[in-house]
Image 1 (cartoon, rainbow, N blue to C red):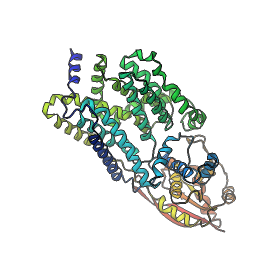
Image 2 (cartoon, rainbow, N blue to C red):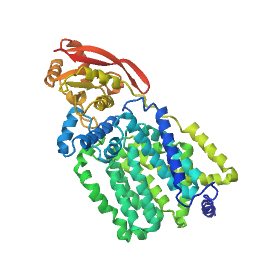
Image 3 (tube, rainbow, N blue to C red):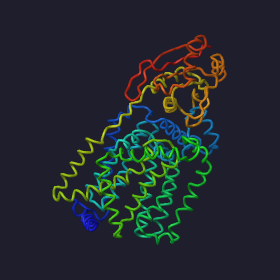
Image 4 (cartoon, rainbow, N blue to C red):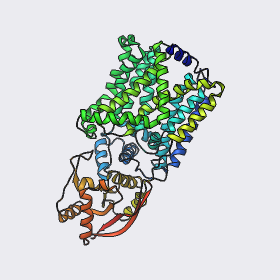
Length: 539
């Protein structure tokens, strides 16, 4: 009886909403996209993203500098051997990470920055466009089932999620990955409904593009079997078209993935999957999936999942996308439980549009009891979200931009070099701020973490290179370092031996390098006065 009641509720869910569209309405869709974009841009502004530098995450400056390199190659050196160009570029700006990550995100950056600009504002607008596009796809996926207004609420919720805000305000590849992974799952769901081969071909192409954006998109490999299981449409497995994505992905994404498999794995926190990591991930990722939307919205998602399971059980038509959405949720989490990429909630972002779909459909089903007052219920949901979950992400990382101008003035000869000593984020931000101000490649920047120490990409196996101050000064002289920048604003737990050794050496060997100025640094909204010191070599 309970199943029949739930089934009937869902049959009337769309009728209970104000405007359930059956066909594409370009004016409505354009308006929805525009509003999502305005919301994303406004949240970026409130987060101080446009006043901040590329310090939202240790990976952000690497993504930015790598995108610059791809753009500069296309604009200035196309036809030159790409590896020769990349090696020279890395020598000048050692924060290039092509190979650690696949190329598609940097292709997107290049397609944007060539007609527009590689400036920070331009890249942030691109990130807002990517987020608005994912929100619009969510809107389109929902509108035929729950109506346009509830679907719009779902898209706006995605943009406003704190985790999404954080990555809209930074040049990171999670949103770009979601832009391919989420529609790939929806297309797979459409195949389950219609059985058209061109849907699986499109799924294969989107999957390949997702994998070429970030390796975590390999979760799509397990979306397909889960989607078939949840839909109960096992007969599709024997169709040749079902297997079409396999050769498409192998041809488009296979060569790059195989060639750089060891480089990409260097970013893992462990050499291979282990049960110890999975145990930690089991405690982390499910909990952070709940935290990503808040407890109230997650309860609504569970309601939506239950109702959609009832419809799938009754073999209702047009439910393939819901089977695929459930499969995407499980597959993204399962991928993070297995692959030891660390414990960071950002890895869950590709699952969030699917989770928002269930939040919205759960709310639409539940709010039917309010009858003509269902609009009041949606307003109450918005209030609950803003009170319990919503917060404006604050970026507030600044100080290296003005400093980059100072250092460039101290290096009148482009052959002169500067050394930056900070944590991974600080070194990357300084390199990015210098690079964006130059006719690249121009000045050469050295990272103290590479010149004065050994470690893996993830920081494992750390060891300082030099045992004495004299040996350290000799290395700076040998390498032609003319300016040294030290940053003491980093957290205490990130102050490693070579950084302390460098500061001590510069303070005691005053005849080698002279302090020419101190500057403030802002991290997470906290201003560290005189945290940055700039030294000039005494010729």
